[in-house]
Image 1: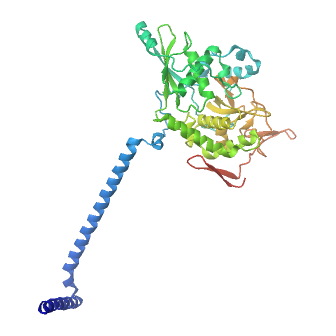
Image 2 (image 1 turned 135 degrees about the vertical axis):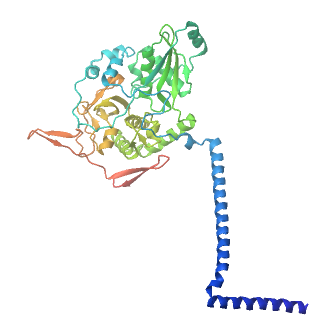
Length: 465
């Protein structure tokens, strides 16, 4: 055993001596070490290549695992994703963006409006301004390119064959009739603008939208397309919470010219409407949480107005006519600003209406709000574009760059208000000094604090209040 150990030790000693001798020779002649360096470098290169290959395979496997997990579940976040498009909303059929002011006047039909409303002298001035407009205000009196409101647009299908029409009548039921539903005029004024037949169709449209019934037959006999369109417009104007309802819709006529089927278009972005609705409502409640304990409707109004201006950015996208784009998301156009302000103020029990018409030189939407000193015009979109309070609580005379159209002519007249932030004149752009008969540019205060809103709508305040 000792002989074996001795031999092993001699071998090890010999190897050590040889290594030392080789190191000494390399020190004298470095070229002797080059082959070994090349071999070592080759081994290291192969080792690094193997490590990189293993990392790449690991990344691909993880990526595949994630995609497999997400696709079948279709999480709520992914379902609500919408592709931003400068061409307009993703709808069942294309919108007509080329309508002129005169086109709207020519298409207006007030046959579904309640007779008492039409004969009320309080609205004569608005009706006349809509039907017989004066020349547009001069360029520069309003923000440019800050209007993009679109009216509901029907697609009509004529069924000329009697048998085919009868088959549709036999196969399409009323869905939800909405019988027994009531709407407080203080919060839902558009419902009360309609005559009895229009109100019946309104209730039916509203009930079927809530039930997610996409098709139904009108509950009224010999229903005209104008009755359906009028009721549909009024439902959307009263109810921003129906955010999944696209402003386009289909109607089918029978051979006698009566509507025999109504078809909703729901935005294709929402794969799970109940889940989106929960998210929408939770987000809205969080957004107004900080305003609930404020002392007056005006304080609540100012809070929501400033919150919206800090939250939103003006940008076209596939949901920009829906309140979802402004309550849950942060990119919208005037229609989204107005519906967001309307809905949040309704949650705070301050009567606020969606008002639409002509703003400057194009279709536009803003709001009418009721405070204890009367009704006032509020335009969050234009205030946001100017970082000001220039369009906050104005009378109709002060708001002369806006012109009401269609059913909005029957909203209450607006008066001037003392409820404005300190220093804000409320006169957009200029004011008049009677003492020296001069016109001067007004300035509105820009607040020194701002709101920070997280992904769930929770609000915190930064800066000085």
